[in-house]
Image 1 (cartoon, rainbow, N blue to C red):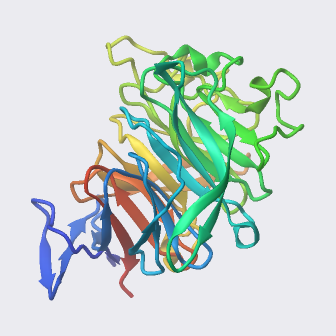
Image 2 (image 1 turned 135 degrees about the vertical axis):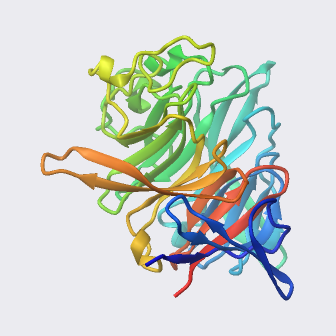
Length: 386
C-alpha cells in the first residue's frame, strides 16, 4: 500500500510537477523514487537561507548567508530580524552559516552561530568562526548580547569554499563542529591545522581532556576525527552514535559513522576522483582509512542533515534525511547494524521537486521542515496524510 505524505506549497509550482489549486493555497504533488507521493506547505521565503533551529517554545531561527538571522513565530512566519548579529561579508560558499541552541537554552538563552571571518590584515584570507551569544526576545524585537567567539578555523587561508562549519551538541553536552579543508586537500591530514576535521569542544570552547589527541597542541587537541573534505551535515541518532555526511570531489559523496580518533582518508582516498579527472584510490584500496558507510556515485551534493527522532511519522523514525543540492532532492536513508557491530546504510527513497535543498530540520512535535537554496529559498513543512 502506497504511503501518502503531505507537502503543501503556496508559491508557483516547479515546471513539470503536478499541482492543484485550493483557495489561496497551491498544492504540489511529486513522486518519490519508490512511488511515494509527496506534497507540502510553503510557509515563507528567504534570501539564500542556510540553516534553521527550533527553540523550545516552537519559535525558530533561520540564517541567511548574507548576514541576517530571522526569528520565526510558532507558525513559522517571520517575526523579527535579529539585531546585533555578526557582521559578515558573503563570498563564494562563505557567509553566515549554522545556528543551534545550547542544550540548556530554556534556562540560559544561549545560542551558537557560525560564520566566515575575513583577516583584518589581508581580506583575501578567511576562516570560519563560532560565536556564543545570549538571545533576548521581547514584544518589540529580538537581539544578541554577550557575544563571544569561542572557536576559529586555523589557519585562515585564501579561497572562499569548503568552510563546512556545521554544529551539533552530543547527548552528554559536548559541541561537535565540522571544519572543511577549504579546497586545499592536504590540510585534512595536517594535524597542526583544524581544517578537514570534525572537532569536539566543551560548550565554552575549551577542549575536553579526554579528546583523542589532547596535550598535542591547542589546535591538534580539538580534533575528534580527520581526513574529511567538506562535511555539511552532522547529527546524533537516538542511541548516541554520531553521523556526518560530506561532499566528495568529483562524485563520491559520503555518509560516515564518526568514531573517536579515526582517519577518513581524504585526500589520500575517496570514492570519487579529482575534478581534473585524476584518479583517487578508493577506500578499499587502502583499508587503513575508515571507509564511508554509504557513498553516492553520481553525487547528490549533500547539505543539511537530521536523523528523525519524532513519533509523528512513525515509519520514518530513525531515518536520516539529507538535503541534496545538485541532486535537487530530499534523500531519506536507513541504517542497520549487524551482530558484529558493522554498520550499513542505504538510500530508502529520493523525493524531487526541481529545487536545491540546503537545510533539513525537525521541531519538537516531530514535524520536518526543509529550506530550499538560493535567492528565494522557501521554507517547507513536511507532513503525512493520515
